[in-house]
Image (cartoon, rainbow, N blue to C red; front, side, top):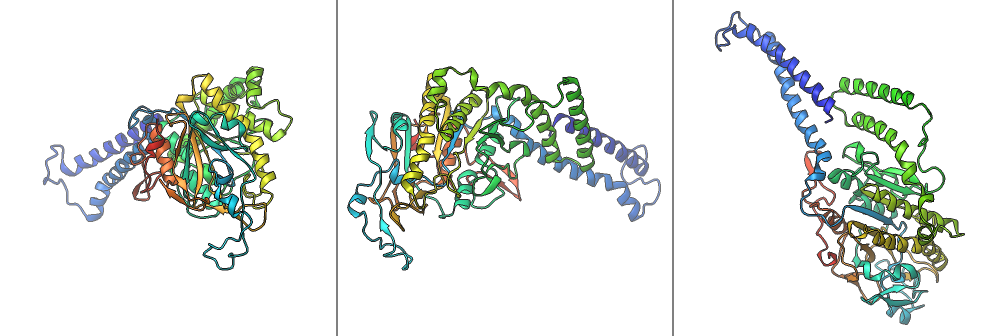
Length: 501
């Protein structure tokens, strides 16, 4: 509840209390002694006399509920335990990167390549699919000796910084539900995004910038904008979307060059919204609209400076691949460099999406696997490695958690000879920085990459680990909604302790 809402509510309570006291004095007499009515009371008169009390009871409950919801703004100073990370950069690999072609080599597939796949529970699939070896080679990198595919030559040089989890397991082989589960912890729309939960718990370090930013290429992922929604959390916790090319945000340049005119317009909007909000009682959406107007005004002066990449050195720009002649690679480098600048400026959670590729996600290569994955890796590999190196050079790596993940992996077998399908039974993610343990490999899939068989992890566990590194207990970060305390991990999730430094 904002300060003006509290003052308004208190004023209303005082007014109602005065009227109630006046009525009580009339009923009880000036002495206030019970049982000494000055005149007989009908049932209608009794209800009229005590009706204001019912309103006070309801108002007290409403104020208590709003106070609980408003506690988000103060939670930043009340972490549940010491934090290892201050910020998160989420590298969303939409469509599903093939684990057996990236960070989980399977030599057994060399032997099985071209042979019939006969292990399906669907009899019609048996004999119609063939095992498919990886088109890429693996080498060991770093002091840890981590195997990394030739798809990612630059990320491979950061092997000692990566905490790789090879034993992820999701629910369904469907993009929309998989992406929603990755972002919100639920297969269904309507739940708050991971970034929303983080900003709800910690707020933003810079009042002039949103706490949750999505660096987008203008393509809505499977599952829709619900992936970035605040759900039932306060509306101020939803994501702000910045575009990759051109002007990042609509109307970021003020239409009114005269600042006094713009401030007057903002004041008028605030006055109208406050009046409307008071007529409805307390309304979070209107309160958030007021907050967003004020945030947008402050962003107009700060965002252009924060996202101005011309101030970066030539060496830094080259580190991220901004000198590339491949447009999609250059733009992904732009987004990674912007992410670093936003984090550096106090934004709590930044998500970077991939340049557009396949219709259901950039990495969704049911066919043309080699060309598709090769292009996607070319777009992202240098910039991600550059981000890690740049954060380390600036002393930000230890306080910034980088998460690399898609909604599932891809099958070790194929309906043709150059494609892989959706595979939630076993796949890979990795983390770096922010208290994660570099040079670590946790878990395993079986010898052909079909199933996670060792230290199986879920998105609930991943979410619990991210919150833990930020100093938040996933079981205690809750919001009262629908009659129960809701949380990102629902009733699931364990912190993945072996990948913590």
